[in-house]
Length: 540
Image (cartoon, rainbow, N blue to C red; front, top):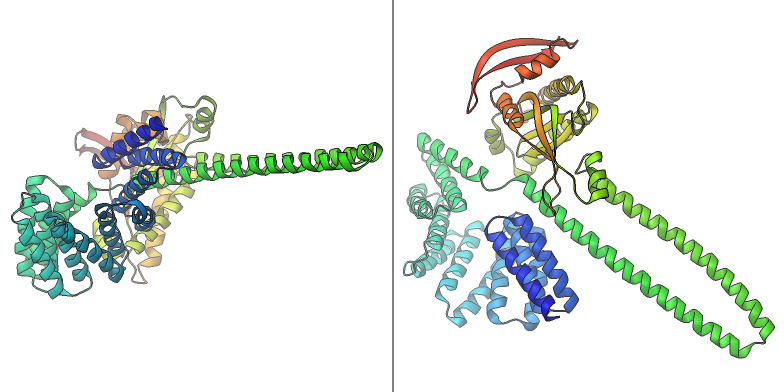
């Protein structure tokens, strides 16, 4: 048992280190494994620590509902066995996540509880943090005077501390409070101070918040050049912070963990029912042996045996059906992530070898002026519109025999000729790209007259050799590597809105294809690649 607890402690610590280094998927794997061990040995303190750490990862990644659930589970344990500092940490975390969820009144309750404990202990730095959290809460609620009071109180405590990170954070919050209250000049002054501190730390999240504050303040005051420069810096900082693929991977780990726990619980429950049924059956037989004559007992025994065999047969059939249903469900999940040949190889051998494949046509698409569009749509509307486009692209890719590789923000990547080469993969990829462009144009024609924002798109294709496969032991994702991928990306970025831009290698494979027409672009300079021959392709 001591060895198990030690292993769980090491896993939990490694998970925290991975989280600090930005490997959130690896951190979740370690923390869930530690949680399994703590649950087996009934270590409540260990469970509370892991629940809080998992909640922090979901909090950081924007999964606020999941974070809230894990924080509450940790608080329930700490309320029974924890000290005031442990409880204060969870009060602060719950206050922050409830703010993100829009429950400002509930968040304020937890922030005040956190402050009361910190003041009782006399921790000046944490008192400053609590004051900042309360001030930010009041700012979101529109209570500017209260927000400024608490934020200035926090900053006064931090000025005597060598804590540049928190000074930058609180200074930026004060700038945003002035911005929300309609005093952009003071907002610019505070946000510039916060940015200077964040620059010294090379902290990208802090810098992103400062650039956002400056952009809004400069725009309000009519300083358009400075506003544009701040917006460009904000977009660059924001784009480097998060990727959609990581959120998907985190949710996949959560689903796998929940499914494994459900299987374990079902198996234990089934074994317990079988044990109880066997025990009851033996007791009944013993009682009948003592009470009935030998002949009658023999007849009853035969009948019971027949009934037991029939019941057992029915149970086995039902069990086989349940096992088959779960196996089919697992297979569908795996095939939604990996191509069938790769999934079959993985199931048979436990891993899949990376392979070099010739003649693969890589298709990239990217929405034009995506940043401007994102400003005109709410987060929900933006995600809904991207989802509608990518669902259509998935159907088109499947119809033309292309393998979807992944989406990266507003970019879509698919490949023809994977996992097995095909002589018509280049033509299939070109026709798929044209159909995607047609779909986007039809969508624009539908939304434009109604006054709704719509996307326009560039598409590019290049054909060549790639290395394809999956890497790692715990994160299965089919991906491709090689210069062909880089060149295909240049085809897209060097193309034009509404067009499909193809390389010379792809053109050589499809130039005789019926139903296609081509416009020679000559040699176009591509960043990092020099001049490349390119062609626009359309329908004949």
